[in-house]
Length: 291
Length: 297
Ligand SMILES: Nc1ncnc2c1ncn2[C@@H]1O[C@H](COP(=O)(O)OP(=O)(O)O)[C@@H](O)[C@H]1O
Ligand SMILES: [Mg+2]
Image 1: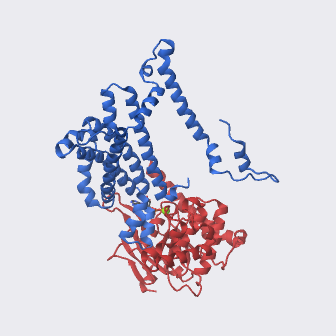
Image 2: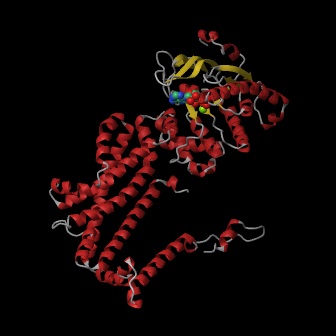
Image 3: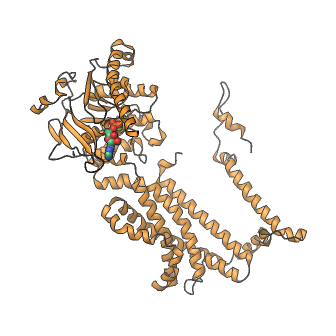
């Protein structure tokens, strides 16, 4: 895609040449080549998928693998049918609620736990070894145990979701706090900072970038785990649906279109969640917005 | 000055330190027979060996020596970042560290300006400068911010106050860092190669700003550098250290009156002093280099 001529004009206004007016946000958005490439890529992909899926109907020959997949037009049609149904939105609500509950608990416990591991040697000596033994166990391996431990399926799912994010968050916080440049700590101490000042004004803000990295990765894992947990637990009687169960029951019911609708819904949900975290990150860390 | 100082090798030269301006009545450092051995039971690196040095109140004392000779080690001992193995260090006649108390307390009377800069990236320049008074609770938050703004303006950084360190040039960041140190009204400024890796032009601007600041505050400076022209231009004395373990090898007195400006750089007197210091440093640099080769072989 060609560079916009006004960009050059703005960079190098020659002598006597009028400096172009500041462009509005909308203009800038429209001139954003990255955005356009993204749109073209997504539209191109959907077209490619449509053509491949329709190939058999048009030419009598099925393209392997992708030829079996329902075309996007059918998926769209099914989606439009489902959209007004409260059950679909309830699935969204249930999964989102579980993700955020597990995620929030993981943050609330994980951040202080990681910071404590980072700043206190005794705490680290005692808690780090068991933590490291438990960490490699995949969250889904906890599902049977969770179902036995917790009285309700809902609690089991929340617990497994929590685990998914917890380990990632702790490892990121620990790593971030431990890798704060020693010069900042020394500078602060030499200006008379107390232990509490060091923690609050140096270690905490110094760890924020890692907290947000942990949150972004943890959020991704939480969605994976919630979906899988919903499928495994079958949604449960009291627990009910969720997007994972939505996909699973669509598969059992033989509706490939509905399975794809579920998958895309999860993609959108995951994207919205990570956008929210990125936005929160830029609000909490204004010094990182510069670059 | 305490009696034991007369026994130390550096003491004789101290008397010749240029008379500091009337205002400088504090910030005299006395380093007496200091030895620092890192990890005596393990790797056992002797970084400083029986080093003595008297720095007068209000003196700009430049420390030069081959890299790895123990300059930072000495600075860290004064700042209280690590302990010394033998000897004593006094500040204005008060013991900072000695045999009974090998690690000096850290305090805002000796503020450090670091090699690569250590402004907190998550605070604006203004918040950075206000940091010391706020954590020491010597001022309320509003008062500290106001004072910080005044001091930044005085240093020509008024427009930059609301910016983050990542948004300003390294020269401005370093200037702000010195302001952040000065707001604590320290007795001594400990500078560890603050202008390293800056281009010559930026450096000369930094030097003039620093001298201007010094003429105003007359704060004692313990200033480490490996740039000999910088050392002579800024310093009252230039202390050349030997290759590791560090001892004082030679002290060059710079009896050039203040205020100084860049025209000094062209003068014969200046060049003679630089070459005098260069001779001493060069000898040590060769020793350090050869020692390095032996270690590799
Ligand atoms: N914590 C440490 N443990 C062991 N050796 C160290 C330590 N810190 C510095 N050294 C060694 O002490 C010597 C002096 O270091 P330093 O004071 O940093 O030198 P410089 O003069 O370049 O500032 C060097 O050889 C360095 O390798
Ligand atoms: Mg050094």
